[in-house]
Structures are given as structure tokens and as C-alpha cells.
Length: 96
Image (cartoon, rainbow, N blue to C red; front, side):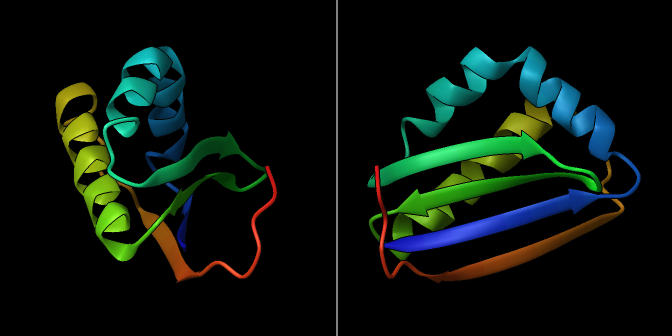
């Protein structure tokens, strides 16, 4: 399995998370179309927020990025994130 963690902070983050919350059903529906999706989470933290995507393979991770970009283009075309940190890796263990 593969994982990607995207940390969002700085300008635009608050609006991004508000849109994710406001359109939660649409976001969930879109993310469920990712082939091999194991789980997806969008959360707030003290600096801004982050998403955690777990997929069976890298193809799913790439597809999730494209879907997230389409979601933003549709619901938040005016948002330009000031900062984002991306961490990708291979899952060692995953508990449900």
C-alpha cells in the first residue's frame, strides 16, 4: 500500500478546509471513485490542515491527486495555497 500526506498551511488554507467541509458529500463521492482507495481523511490542525490518502498502489495516489485538483477547480478556483508539504511513502502496517 501507498500513502500520501498533504499538509496545508498559510494563505488560502482556511478557505480550502471550509470548502472541503461545506462540500463533504461531493468530496467523499469523488474520492470513492479512486481505484484501490483504502482510506481518505481531511482534517484541521493548529497550523492549518492536512489530508491522508492510503491506496493499494501509486496509481491510486496519482488518481487521488487528479480528483482533488478537479474538486478544487470546481469548488474553489480562486484559491491559491501559499504553502503545502507533501510526504509519500509505502505503508508498513495499517489497522482498521
